Amino acid sequence: MKREAKKYLFDIKTSVESIFDFLGEKRNFFEYQNNKLLRRGIEREIEIIGEAMNRIMKIAPDIQIENARQIVDTRNWVIRGYDKVDDVVIWGIISNHLPKLRKEVEDLLTKE
Image 1 (cartoon, rainbow, N blue to C red):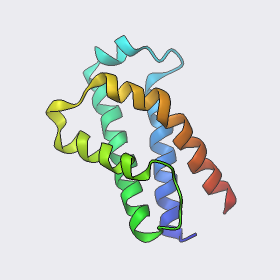
Image 2 (image 1 turned 30 degrees about the vertical axis):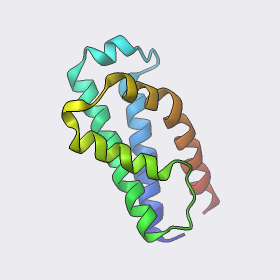
Image 3 (image 1 turned 30 degrees about the horizontal axis):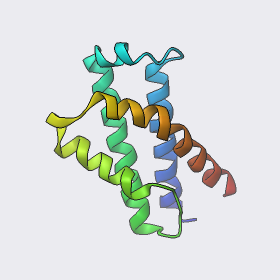
Image 4 (image 1 turned 180 degrees about the vertical axis):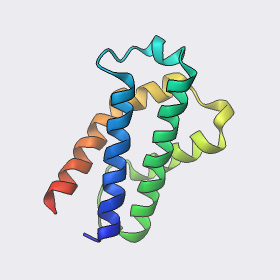
């Protein structure tokens, strides 16, 4: 694996972990929804995840991550559609997709 691709995988891993750190053990949707700073922090981490994924897709297309294209599309939606970001959709990503992404990335990083 290219060193640069490994760095981007590490960036994704770091951002996913940051999101879970921001939320703590409780992971309460209503606290998330009512805390603008928390929402913006998580949105920024999602942007970083999407940008890192986009770069991986360009330099190392052999790295297979399920939903890679959707991850980049989510980044674009958060950045370009900032006024249409839906808290419920972001919460669904956090709850349903980030744990799997974290596992995929960790597996790729431990292979090297």
